[in-house]
Image 1: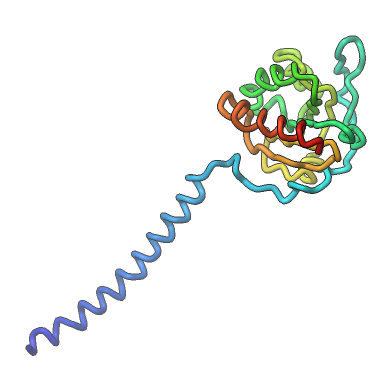
Image 2 (image 1 turned 135 degrees about the vertical axis):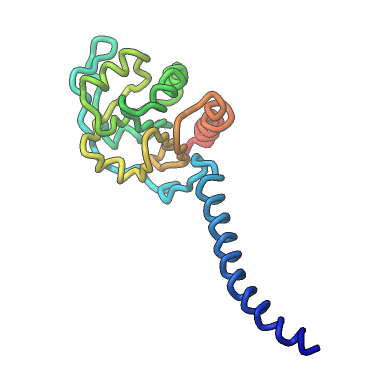
Length: 197
């Protein structure tokens, strides 16, 4: 009996030492799971349901389509039209992957595709669009990144869907892919077209 009494305090002390370590490891594992285990395209946007930013952006110098200069972004362009707004850059690797999908999406004339060129040089941006084709009827240049902050951009590429009333109704974080273009993006566009938003 006396032997048990002398062993009990060291076991209790060991438990007190090990318990915080186990709690720390459990919390660290949970943190890592939340940090790396989620789908980045599911990051919510505080701008959903709010008007698209009213930031005018200049046109991309020298960009021409069908013999006419491609205009810059005028916020009035959103009124009355469903718009897909893609934030992109020539230096962005995933932007190269999504470019052919956006060009294909641009074949559908029921909505407009607007590009926001993020912190890019005009020459590189034009070369990028020359390589893949230009799906954008409007290209605004965000040279200092201020407009992208107003749009709530985490990083390029990101794609927004703006309804006919000029309200942001959907946001896709990350590139448009073969998987999400049909299952998510086109479905959201169809909803916006039917709803008359």
